Image (cartoon, rainbow, N blue to C red):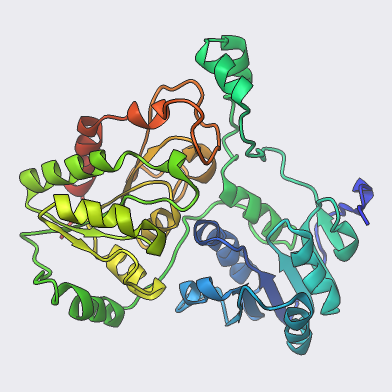
Length: 387
């Protein structure tokens, strides 16, 4: 069923006033946050349209209070293709914007008999789209480095390093989604990702979590966040003992209180941090998505690995400090690329980024980022933000 005919990559879509639009959202938290600039541009292009977002159930609450969205259509992981398509068909949508690259996401819209279906041209799915959009000119495919490539880089093959280290200015993932929105006539100029929480949600967070822990919202004791986990794999994790050392040193110098965030899979890391950092409250695995968002929005700064909460915090206006190892801040960093509020730290390891889940050598990309450097980055960010 593969359609390799690039002739299906048509000029920009010409529909002028779609009344009902459904956007097929992406499946991971960080990626979902990076779609928000495209959704904001889509809303501006079609201010009177009814825009629904089809999203996995685990991400549905992310979109509460978001002005770009009129409706969230959530599906759970076990819901079948035909069930999802029937729900889309019942929505009587005239246009589907398919953000993921998977064959299934395009097939959902085709089975729903949505007249116009727009998404990226990819193998095994172009037949299901009425407009298969070619990648934008500066797009970069994230590819795992092989063990042989890593050895060549470590050995100092400079020519190979130069060939694999060039990134275009618009290589960041947010441009991928903006380019799709632009195929519908939306503005492709970048915006910072944005999410929204209410004051009531912040107050409820304080009441439900921090008061129980004996912590109060005090300007004299600012709150800072810690995210020692990362779902993708250990190659994205700065060593936990360095999180601990950094948190204790920053607490000593500022008197801050740390809130430890993460999912259920990060529980053991968070427990170790909480046990070794007297000024920490462990909230890992204990918050809903909305509670996580409220807590992150109250922090002076978030020190975290490259993770979904990193993107959420930045989109809520909380500056982040992130040690990057196997992944690239130029491609998937938080916020608007180049935002000086965030400190995105890298070592000089020649093999980074390798995009591997597990380091095949000695994790030098992460161990090359020192505690002292991260402490200074956290302090530099935190002092610029009001309590």
